[in-house]
Length: 138
Length: 162
Image (cartoon, each protein chain N blue to C red):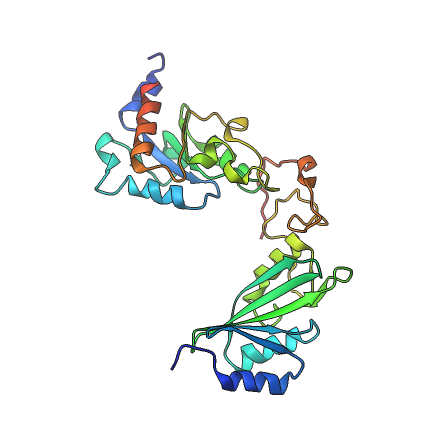
């Protein structure tokens, strides 16, 4: 535990959801983990409305020529240090969209991603496990 | 009212536009093939006189030419009437419907940038979906398109568009 700021982040990570042109399935699964059945607020994980309040970014979808500048702008506005969690197979690689004319390549070419959660879409349990693994690494 | 196409409307269509060919694909799905010069008048007739609504348009690059399909919905009977027209590839021009039909505005912009069809009379034919750095004469959904996007610069700064 070298960084006190990271230690503070671990207690209750506030999460901002960045939908970079996903097909909405991952977004719906992210909404699921806020419902009473999975209820991630018991771990202190809270969805916030602005990247300026966030400790972690949940990114979904394939980066494309239009969404890349927007994602970079949101990432620049997030206070550092921050976690970046890629939800869905689209963030791990470009998935089936790789040969498309609009796809610009994987996330880690542009921003550092701490954890990838594969699945199309990943189960809510998998998303929670991914966040827990990201926090354990700190 | 029964949920299927109405014979009266089809009769009126074939009386007013005798050259169209009507295909009844299903009770609630009608295809109407028409020449591209008549599309404007025909769509105006459906929209203004018969209370049809434009759902969406489709552009397809076929072997015989660019095919544009305007999908009109008749909400009263729950029926879709699709206007099909074929544009020759050496003269990709069609009269725009956006002058009287706001619903056609964005989809015609999209077909214009992705397939390169020129909609004559369109009020605002700027690119809608492709990136700001994308060249205007490159149409990615055409059949002869091959990986030309590899050399196009990726912009990291957003620019105001719309």
